[in-house]
Length: 155
Image (cartoon, rainbow, N blue to C red; front, side, top):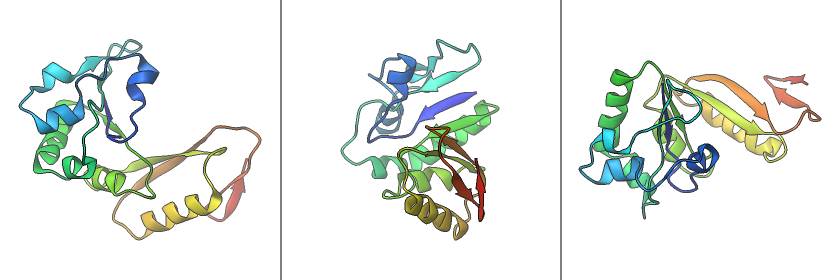
């Protein structure tokens, strides 16, 4: 399995996993580095490879929409049984949509203490009108909130 930090604006994966972010996805796209030079093994799971975001580029959207990124995504898909991309939020930037459109589908993570209901509704409406497949929604952040999914309330 490969976990890719595709948030080239505010990456957090390397901090959460205590990994170096000196080289990563942005460097792989913008230079001639080999994948083996930037991929890291998870300190927590032996069958998990991690590709951190790398250095913050001046134009993340340009990198993520490049032919080289598309080629890398194809390489990842052919090399690993499962590839997970951690992206920036779906609303407000095109980055997540660029990545999602090249995958089998998305799982949207919603922070209950951070996400406004209107933002969640906007994201769901955007996804409903796109070819992006939504596998599901993970709600995290608090056990004290109700969330409205598909017209019904779940707790």
